[in-house]
Length: 290
Image 1 (spheres, rainbow, N blue to C red):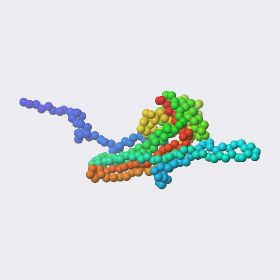
Image 2: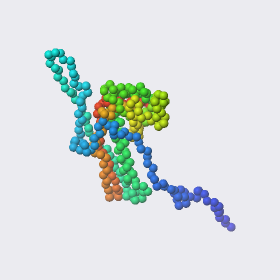
Image 3: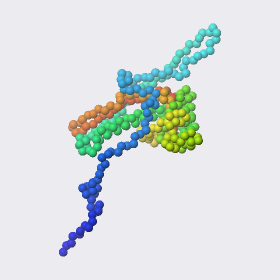
Image 4: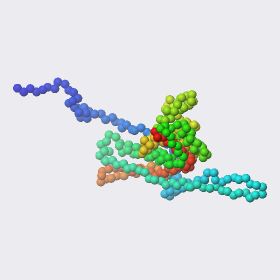
């Protein structure tokens, strides 16, 4: 006589997650990534919009007076007064470059997805364009003449030397832009931590010191750039009145399109922008070997 084994208890071995036996819950929320620390537009000495640049052609120039041109001289009695006049520096040429990304999504995905993926992708494209602006600013500031190369970590002497580069050319250090590795270095300098030296406990309370030597400290994220490990080691002392210009020829523009033969819909997102330094000596780059 044949006997049939009886299952006396039920365990999870009899089911698989995602099946009817053991449902798998998908939360109705798609978790966003963390927002990056970007450079605010008010730091630019000159910021021009697409509307302002609408009739400028494919490129245009900004005219600069040469610093310290024209002189006043001592004149002897009865002598002819010396003539002099202002001189002009090499113009800053603005040549906007187009940046863009295209997003495509199948109609099936739009019909079946739990989330509005097309709209979410458009929103993130906007974030990436903002990050690209910060990256362009960092790259342009890094191309200026003044530079201080520190050791494994930034020091107070490095910061003071960077400020002096601006001051010896009659600029005022207004802002200190720092990558996150430089920010870590600042947190390890006791002058900025200890209350009897810093005059406050801001660094200990918040992990951030808003002002150093009268300069506003502005953090930028390494991941807003295409070379995170390198750009994290960068910092810049700038005079925001003279440092750089951001010029848009085309604001961030979204153009929707359909691809009927592929049963897809999509969008092309573009902008035309240029970032140039305005006065070379109004910026000093400070880097470390990290």
